[in-house]
Length: 114
Image (cartoon, rainbow, N blue to C red):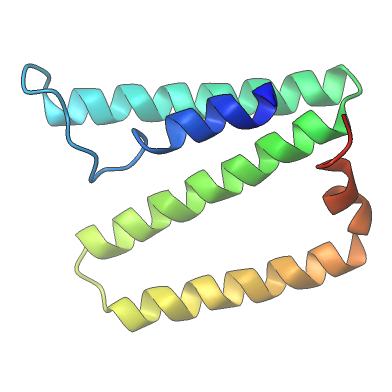
């Protein structure tokens, strides 16, 4: 449960569109939370890999992918690029991910192991 709770609790403040406290600069607050996010994800992958817990490593990898997709979407929208291009690129990524997951079903199974 801890491998899901911490990244999920940090998922909301990672967003660029999350409101910042009034006394903090927007960039500093955004950068600090994203550095924390990257650290938590990397630590989860490292501990899961070195500790022999494939579920922890794979769960952290999934949250890493979610974080990267969110950062790409923020970059895409902030740059003013067309919205349909974002949907097309994300659809291609999901298609490739589904092909990879079809070839590696043990990845999905390890997400549910204790």
